[in-house]
Image (cartoon, rainbow, N blue to C red):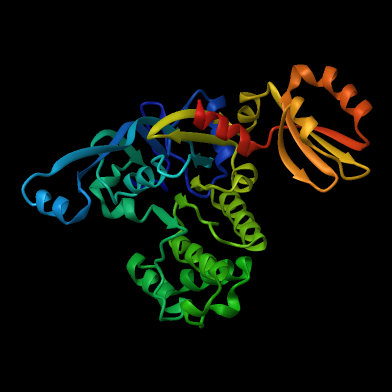
Length: 358
């Protein structure tokens, strides 16, 4: 089914690619129509089988005849959907199953059980039309030829996706200008910095204007300026094309700036699906109190009031229960040379950490 055409079937409507997604959803919600999710995942699971190996020469010899088979469940019956135009953060600790899920949604891996559709297609059927409708970018994997200039890899992608010359030149010119890498197109990829290379990866993935964009830690290892440039570009791309983006990242700045909604998985299971603001309320019983002192002090007594999480010269951050602050703060002000103080919500990283441990 061509996602670019508007098709009405049983009160379900597909979004034309050029329409603003949020406006589209609002318009058809007002008319009582249902917008079909771009990504729809139902009870998806993936197991990996492996054999345990005993240590040493004796163990290796024993393994020739007797091997213990084990099964690791990387993803366990997760369900979620992504609406047209959404940017959704998909986060979790290392080994939680994020990359495995993205690989199943891109058709690289077959699931052990469950169902999923992306743009109306079953990913692991790997139909030609499906492969033209999405893009996958992994921060630790490269689709560019390292010994060739990026322009050569882009030309190869042009041939693969059968992009007309006029469209190719227009898209490359627009993307390189926006990402500030126009002068690096004819330089060997291996001679580019990590940030420049990552921008070229994005351009290669977006040449065919996908309506679904799967990003697996796209800003990993990048400096602050490069991270911000990529975040700005993704926001602009989403705004202009209405593409849906599913993003994994360990940088909370990526999640806070790009995503209105977050899905958290841990040990292969979904543990949270809601707004980023809702995350902050998840552990709202605790606050952080940042104290600035007029001189260096002994911080040991401060541990009586809460958990000291940051200790810098003349500055200390304490995490404490919100209901204790009113009683504790006057004691601190009376006992220590406090020059200034602020009370803030817990950092998003701490909130997410508490969810992992729940």
